[in-house]
Image 1: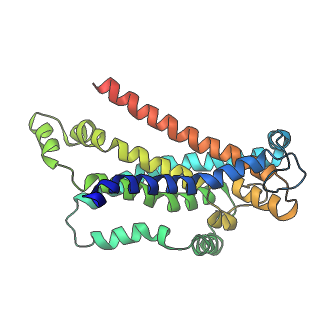
Image 2 (image 1 turned 90 degrees about the vertical axis):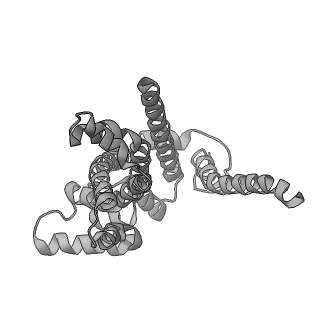
Image 3 (image 1 turned 135 degrees about the horizontal axis):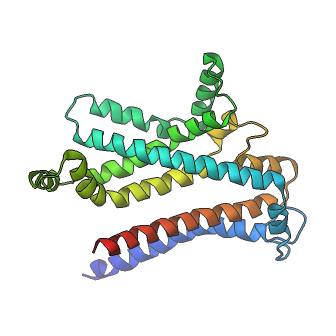
Length: 267
């Protein structure tokens, strides 16, 4: 009885410890970005907005931030669409090739980013399609990396899905597309939202694959931060990390709000 009563406390302690482990690196980045010194050090020598202003006035970092945002947004939209379609197919198909296809779709997660980036770069160069070091080529690479996250989250929501709900809509006169849109899509909407958030975060912070597909005039934010850390070691990279964290947090909050508002209006 004594052990059973302590179980919730143990779980709470583990949850708080896990949360602290996740938040400590973010706190380090924020404090390093607010450092008043000339070099990237921790603990900071003092607090200042000096490097925040340097980021906001840096053409290199602002351009890289914009490229990362555009690529992440494009990859998220495409991955959400095709990932949801693939998840529906994998969960409803009775073909014996479904396990093989599921493993094939999950390969970009299993393969190291360096291997996938090198393979895409070699393919783009040797095939002569002209996608090496271009925005479309970079977008294709990010779609390949982010799509499995959407497939995994949406597939998980479809595992215990009751098909009789959709069949009931069909029996009331709704067509297959209408029944899917009004019944299935509304039920799996939270999973689709979660998958899109994962896709955006993974794409925005993608570095290994981007290293092979980017160009000097097409730098993403992780590439620009790596270059800054390699040659200057200034806190501007940490200041850029603050804005990257802020964008991810804002995207999660906005998505959560939109889902909650949708539920309210549906009531």
